Length: 81
Image 1 (spheres, rainbow, N blue to C red):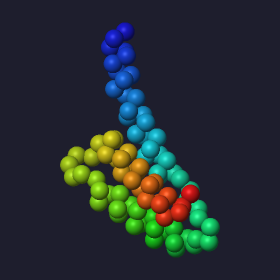
Image 2: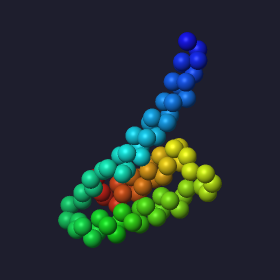
Image 3: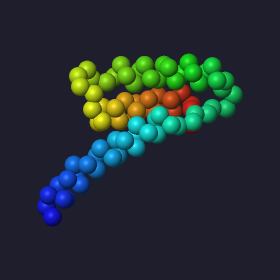
Image 4: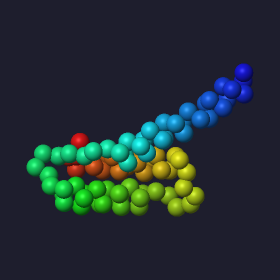
């Protein structure tokens, strides 16, 4: 029983991280008055900014989730919903 609880506690953060990654990858962005070109330009800028903030080294689920959260934050700061 202890082993099962330990395994569940170890897997829970990974599941939450996968939700963050999925939200960033599959989200449809909109902003009043914005064009597809605006979206493409600002999406590239936010992807670059989020990736630049990632520490070098082996990519992990946690680092990918953190990058996804930075990307979403960047897009929302630019008025995208």
